[in-house]
Length: 111
Image (cartoon, rainbow, N blue to C red; front, side):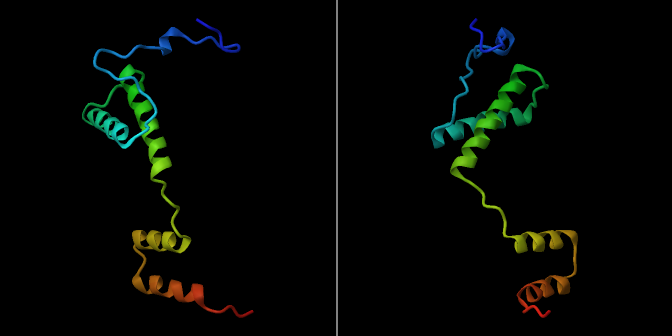
């Protein structure tokens, strides 16, 4: 095995796919993405034990799915006012306070 710098890869971390398993590769298409989601969905019913090859596979699948979603379906951060309103509604603040917020934000400042 070739040394990489001062670190030598261990054979324990390198495993060939089992019969029927596909090699995990970067997602390059919607079909790849759908196939990865289908495979991850199977793990939801039978959560693998931490430290097992199945758990490692689930972690890798989750990482490539997250990367694909970040590249192709980015989510913009919420507007600050909308985020505050959402938090206030979720916390149960009464409506009069929520209605007063936009008026105060747009009111001219006097100093």
